Image 1 (spheres, rainbow, N blue to C red):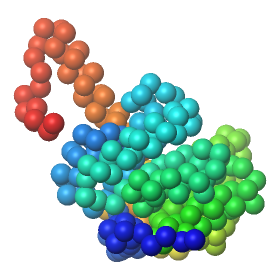
Image 2 (tube, rainbow, N blue to C red):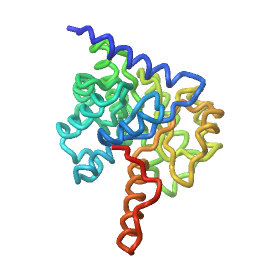
Image 3 (cartoon, rainbow, N blue to C red):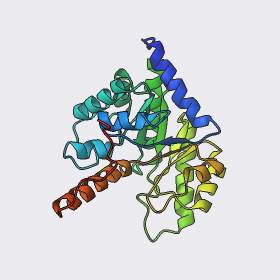
Length: 264
């Protein structure tokens, strides 16, 4: 039996969906714990997304569903409760049961999520997308699934690039047909390839990740029709780079950086 969700949950879900279809690109600096969520929220962010890689690293686990789901969900719950923004959770490939994992995520206040296809047979990947969307409907919310295809991540280096892009498009179209509102194609950074995928999927249907030193600026991605750009584990790496650099300078006889702010 479908439960009527709290009004606030439905509102956050609708807000997150609207942010993906708005003319302005949705830019998400991924977070991994409460303080990172609070710091990003304070910049005027309109929504938050967690990074599974970063949360796993926080607890000493390698990426790839090695962190126990209970521990992962507990951290995401803490993030959701710490901010007054829609939160999307990266639940990787769904921990063996995408529908149930989505239901559990919704129970802690999550209103969107990333789901990896890991290049499974397309019918299996589509079934997983359908399970996630069904869980959202059962909860009575418009769950914002960012359906990820690993067509570029797992591509044969010797494969013609055009064939790799065509496969990303094929899978992306299938996920959209299955109800996902947007499709995530990591490692898609070249302007012409982004343009080709947007033309094939439609405007405000594509999400990409910002890669340091390789990606286009968010404003240019917006002009190309991209719906969303996120940062994955790179925001945590920015923080860790600053920490390591500061520690090295201190140990070399210096001081901590001038201008360090009391953000916690």
